[in-house]
Image (cartoon, rainbow, N blue to C red):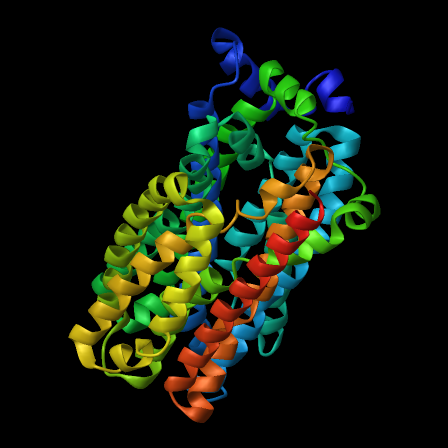
Length: 444
């Protein structure tokens, strides 16, 4: 048992969270866990999309004005990837903090690091003020975000899955995934509003900084919402009795290394599509068309709403046909979509809308079950840390370099090659699911 779990609270925020819950002590309810999961994931994805949007519409001009727009965007996407490279390191560091001081201390430190790194980006001077140091500073803060994201794993998604009714596992598996489209909706709408109401000079001068301030405020709210759950005695007991405790990294990799790798590749189709309908198309429209970004950001917000509905539907479908079956079926559908997705994106305003709505529909169905199909095979004694590592590696392999790769392929060989990238993700998912099925059968 950790110090924080057996002794006094380790921070004033934890003490406040415990006092808030004194009147609500009782058994662990899936509904309460779901609320904490949604709030936490939405705040993380809001941070993600605020930075991603700025990588297209701000940083190429602010940080890399000495190169052309395409090269500046590619440089910006390179810094974007640093957070995903640093994320596994964050898991290693904060797992040690978790084991020594408790989950409450881990979350407090991680989310304050995330909030501080995020809000500090809002104060970054441009290249014209401090030269190339602005790029190094941005990269440093992006690494800080990645380390913090690795430490923000709270185990609530695993606890939610274990407390879900047997016949509704698919429904509860999709709940954590709702944070992605919800975070995108808010981030896109906020940027669209600011861009649409400011001149280009004012936006690049100071307007773009406001979403990063909002991200910090949301992180503070999310921190308290999650602490309200994880530091209460009933939830601490639930984590312990379900054996959802952090385990040493080497021990975890030694016991579950193969399954962690398979789990990291299983959601590649949904992760590839994730960027094909969010970050990459914004960069393509911004660089290769005459459209303003505000309009496309509004389309993304509407597409995200479709994604929310599709994620909810994925839970209903998965409970009837099985999570692996749904994930495999959507991977095949994404492979088919990759054949005509580039043509839709290049077909003008109507084509963009059809591309985005159909893409988000597929994304919701696939992404809704992407995290649970393989993670459910982890033994309870290693599920907490194994799930965190699997999430880190999945984002690194499937998302970290996706915008850079897709834009590089498009700029060199044409838009059709972005479809080839999407196809490779679908193939990766199908292969991983096949290997996972063989591994499960071998253990029977």
